[in-house]
Length: 126
Image 1 (cartoon, rainbow, N blue to C red):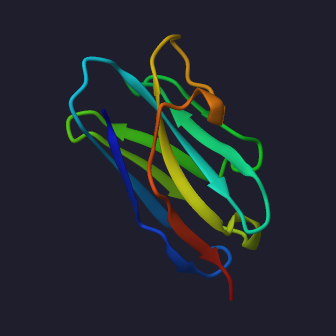
Image 2 (cartoon, helix red, strand yellow):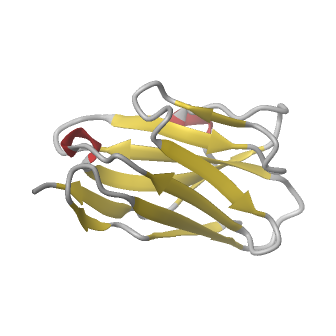
């Protein structure tokens, strides 16, 4: 059983930056890829970025590529999402989720996730 806790959300002006953190805890013999999702008001949940259990492979959706950077500190069981050049369209609840490793790359599919955090709100507004 894994527990995931997001932090770092808040209010930021357009063009600003935030760094989200996902703390992963729990006892398990499995390895997990970590995926960031977001859900804007009135919209469905969408994948944002993912990183493999060893941090060697990352992927981004087109709408954040070049602006967001995902990273992982395996010694601290932490995953980070550095978000730069934020836009009002980035406003959403951001969730991290864990996908038990069954393939060497991560995928941003909500139905594949085994554990979810409760989310942190990011608001981009002037």
